[in-house]
Image 1: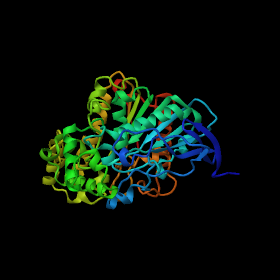
Image 2: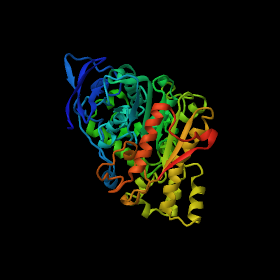
Image 3: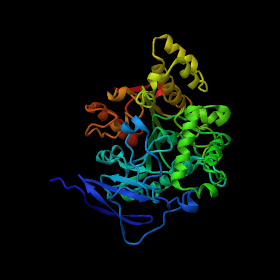
Length: 474
């Protein structure tokens, strides 16, 4: 008889004792704080320890999420997002097949959401399927948007990355209590989460915190020049009528801060002028990101791809890939692709290296302007930079994949984020991204490859640089 939601064993971690819940033989410990609430004077400070507690703390419910606004319009119908207010949102979740085991591989999930949305509490991010297959799976929250990534005078840069580093230090120090091996940690993430993985792979601050890395639909270019990032913050502060300092922004209500953040993002999307916003913000953001990591000389000493080319992270095997039709989620699902003309596409690609020539070649081949723009932006933002990451690691194992399963939803095809339910093997029910009859064989192959990579360092196909390997999932 299956016993669901019964008490899990009590686990002792660095801050006290916690109890989780047991479901179908998998122990889940949810909403565990790894850092103190980033509120009040701490809103724009580096993460601090969470503090200890007496007795046994229940860890049976998901914790709060970072402040954010819902996804707009049709994209919100396709992408899950749960927003739950609460100060203690620097939390993590742990799924394990056996807290009493030892030496199990560990995977730490860093969610996406353009550095402004997302959390660790989405149903498709549940790590029970990885635990089912012998892996301790951890999902983390981190500060988003202005609180996490704006360049603010009087505050440390890259606070969202500092949160991720604090979470990884927590995992290193505590995962053995859940049966995991602190010397066999794989970080994996999608979109902004994959860009975070690239940042961590390149960062001297992350040395020794993980053994392997997986990037799903990311790149190694997501880092802004500090001066450009300050332009975004200055405009945000102007809208709020305050100084662009940590002290002043810390006094602004969360609702007002999110409203101003959304307004600035819209302004950049509608008028991506490098003279106004700076070249790095416009080129890296691709119209969908306005706040992201900053080259600060400490957490990020250079663009991740440049630091990786110089040898950072060279000892870490990397599994990285992209979806064949990434940008269709952003342009086709919203109806925007149908309205694209050659002129508007050309204007949108003005800051993208080689973008206009690539657009014209696709138009000459008979593609519509909207479809051609989606293809060019997919190459510029995902497949091209991911391949470059492999090429700048000539002596490091790097395995590439392309996800090609075509979702029937809103003509997004193999669009951004469609691979996530397959990676997590959560195809139960009709997921908004995958449609009513997703192919379980692809989930078996992808999920199995991720587990194999986290366990052995090899996903099951040849590495890219020395053998030209590329695995296609379709």
